[in-house]
Image 1 (cartoon, rainbow, N blue to C red):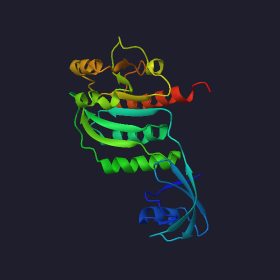
Image 2: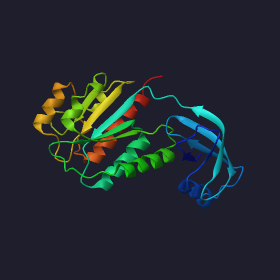
Image 3: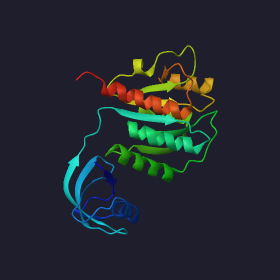
Image 4: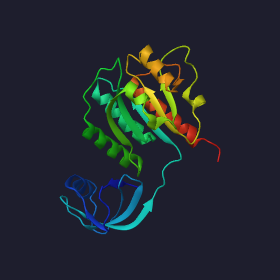
Length: 238
């Protein structure tokens, strides 16, 4: 199955923007009467028919609407961006494919404070969801201070984790996380969190956790955390 994206699907007929129309008609060589699948990124899958193929403005008809309920769990990844923006874009893309629900970018004491282009990251999310056939797009949040984030009362009902490198911190996230919960996990910069930041997180009931014996790059740690939480929830007994 191929999946396409269109934000405004309130009417039974809609027109695609030029970029998506060109891809559908010129690249994939779709014709009038061909069946295609669309999502609005909010959990809906639309079975559609091409009415008027045009590489600049294709007209689509919705035949059926299918709603995908949200997961019983919620993965919120809070991560300090790397100086190399390409690595962050790669992380966002792969975390989306694996199944993250929300990503917040943080500034901590040892952060290198890169400039993130949120519109470019949103395009990466859309492309990754289309690739992995996801009808719910994760939420992307702009940069927040680490200490401000951990004191946000929004997360009082979440299972809260902070991953960092320390030989005493040897209990893996896989051992600590419960199933069917909302989670937030903090991933620090390449210089890791400061002792003061760790203490602030502990004071807010964030649990220390390991992501394995290897020292991981920040973007790799983000991927490992999301994948671990997905495994916990998808391998649970039925």
